[in-house]
Amino acid sequence: MIIYGTAILAICHLLGDYLGNTLGSLLGVQANVGGVAISMILLILSKEVLTKKGYLPQITQFGVLYWSGMYIPIVVAMSAGQNVVAALSGGMLGLAVSVASLIGTVLVIRYLNRLSGDYETYEWSIETTEKIA
Image 1 (tube, rainbow, N blue to C red):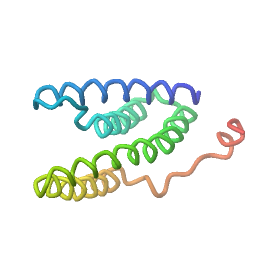
Image 2 (image 1 turned 120 degrees about the horizontal axis):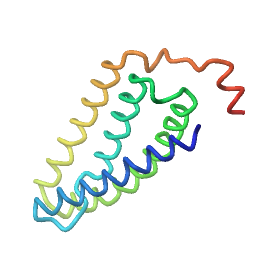
Image 3 (image 1 turned 30 degrees about the horizontal axis):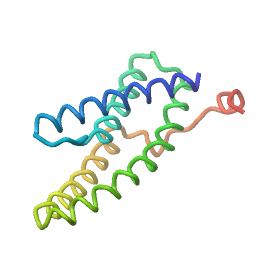
């Protein structure tokens, strides 16, 4: 069911938020450090692990893909706005860290896409799409 995809997203978001706040506390910053990124990584990993073990039916995979498609752009855009203001007020070190994290993100996404190998060739069966509609 698609609702299970929403539940997986919610669990990953809560864990990412908790881990981001914990990381911020450990670094001595009163902020969520990387919570969105952690939750996205958890979402990707949980989807892959559950799919490979056979616990995630195709319709639930559709729910995960749908919500990740909706969640990622919105939350990343909100976080990016805050990060740009913080980076510009932080001076050269903030700017250097921002550029390094952007380059690192691009490289990790490229690596994960190559690792999966089936992202561009994945096709939904006609039966599954008819059940959804």
